[in-house]
Figure 1 (cartoon, rainbow, N blue to C red):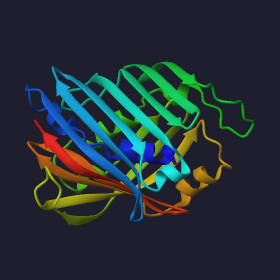
Figure 2: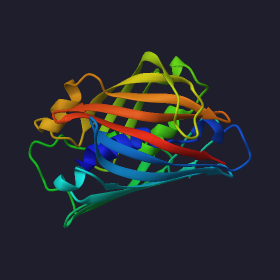
Figure 3: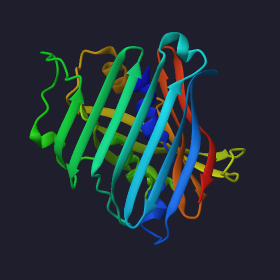
Figure 4: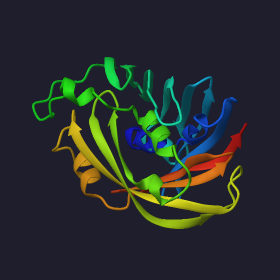
Amino acid sequence: MWRAVLFLWSAALLLIGGAGGQTADPVTLTGELTARLGAIPVAVGSFEAVVADGLYRISGHGRTAGVGRLFSDGEARVESTGPLSQSTILPSDYRHELKERRDRDRVEIAFDGQQVASISIVPPQKPRRDRVPLGAEHVRGVLDPLSAVMQLSAGPPGPQLCDRTLPIFDGEQRYDIELSFKREERVGGLSGIDSGTAYVCGIRYRPVAGHRPAKSAVKHLQKVDGIEVWLANVGAGVVAPIQARVPTPLGQLIVSATRLSLQ
């Protein structure tokens, strides 16, 4: 479950890439998130995103809650840092750590521009004959999951935000996230966001390397319809995802912002 939540956490962390290249003043966005299966809460979390002096830092922490604790008592931490300008986002470091009961999964990536310089995975991946080999060509011109959302958030509000493909490497897998505009929705009632328009992007997951094609989760994500991310203007030129959704065999998994504070 935590891998699915982390996937959406990366898609729904409320970021400040749109404002970062437009102002010399430091900008900080903090908030809280919830994850649920249908109406059932499974996880809660918090985040902080800071842009200052041409650099960004995003960090988030989540833990199981409600019914989720019955299936997996765990927590997740994720962080990404790097330089940015109005048109360019270049990650320098990315890390995530997942804990489930006695198991721990830690990934660290160092970048040289958009070229991966080093990878640390603890515990190491087990050799699998059915895993698509990951080569040097697969870790060039890529973004980590959080930096990819910074790229997603860059630009003025509008349907064109959904017109892009994000090349992502998470330390274990290389995949593309293809976005396309689906519709507009009216949003309101969220602390930190005035009532207004959200632009809903459809998402397609396209694995490239490092994955195991026969795994049920990989096959499900490739064929499923209905994965979405909702983008909204949260003020001061900041465009941010406020919700992400993915259908699962157990119901629709939804990660939503519940509170925002922009400074």
